[in-house]
Length: 126
Image 1 (cartoon, rainbow, N blue to C red):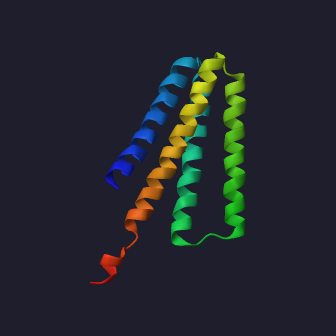
Image 2: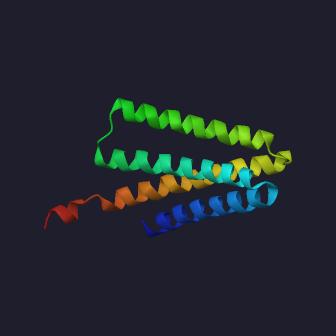
């Protein structure tokens, strides 16, 4: 489990660093930097909230629909922002991949913590 938790942290941190450092250098205006930072934070927050509520088993259809809608809006904002940013095609692809790597890392990190928090058969025998 320690190896998978380390890999999840590595995915999340490497993705976030590539995303933030690359777009910080590429976007000349402060408003563009804030826009992309907001998109990253919103995407990570959606994943966190969804996984936390699924761990507690408190989700209903309305909550799932809101999370899916916010994920689609965030993805659309990222794509529109990358389309309008003064970047080459390779940079756009790299930043999109870094965003996906960061989100995947956060999902895996929360998933690993959920799996390690669950009791095993040995724990229940005590």
